[in-house]
Image 1 (cartoon, one colour):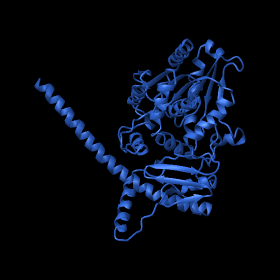
Image 2 (tube, rainbow, N blue to C red):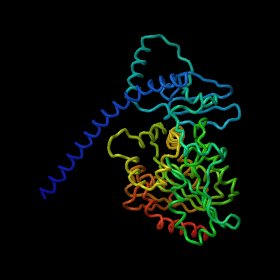
Image 3 (cartoon, one colour):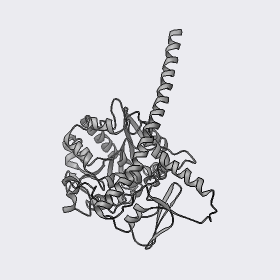
Image 4 (cartoon, one colour):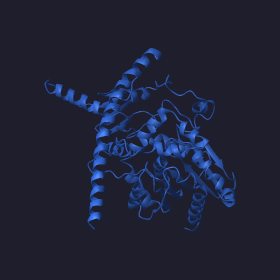
Length: 430
């Protein structure tokens, strides 16, 4: 008994020591990275000036002021950003996440402390102000052009020769006699091949002959357009899917299968088309309930990027599994502009909307909701699926042991294809 107690005590001590060491190392590492980020900001500005003969704005350089560009006013208050549009534009209220330009940084916090301290010695007149980021102003002005640092490879620019105004959609199945439609939405830094090279070949002959399978490359990823003047907001992503899939293929009612970040787009589409959804299957949905009083976007930013050196989340685990050529290609087939804005404006920017989306699915949609999650997922923890289930009690959560964020599909595609077929078949009986 004493030996067992001593072992438990030792484990607790080692766990506490490990946590302290992790915090100390993380603090040191991110202090260095913050400083490097601060220096690189100026380095890139110098390179911009040298190559393109002008200083380029970045998300480090936000200033407290009101910016009015024509009839567009970009408003950013503490932890909330909005585009107030008085003319026709794709950008509307609450599209921009403040995490794009307001993120925790030791250097930034130190600078802010020094500035606030200096301001205390001065008599200033308090006026109503707006915080604006100059990079977003450039987008509003439509002054964004390809940069020297943008990728110029064939994969990232293949869309420029054709299909400029619609997304790439891989469609399989009968064209005219399809009884059912299924929309597949991939996750972050991925593409439609996540579905087409895994699930599509493994569906039964019956499904292939009666279902129309529609796998889309979302805006900025895969073979879809990657416009430099887009902020890749939720509204832009959803409207492009509606235009390129629902309208182009005349889809009236459909099933949705979505992975990771794609789950947010799936929920947004389901809320807009509640009477059209036949089933909703979400894999690793990134839903973190925001505590009351917490700034939603910043809270989600801390959850997905906790500024810790351990465990090695997402990148290392995912790349280790993406050993096949098609997955490596989809991992690279996007631009930094698309990935950066999509991450912030979809994952972080929708934090305040997901509760209402889930409540709408719970109360207005009658379809079956199924959640799949890898038991070893270090990118999106399993708790996220259970969080969704708490908002939608009828949702079924299926945790697949010894599978992670990618191997929830890759490596078990035959099994997962059969699971999807069962879900779709049940929806016919409802």
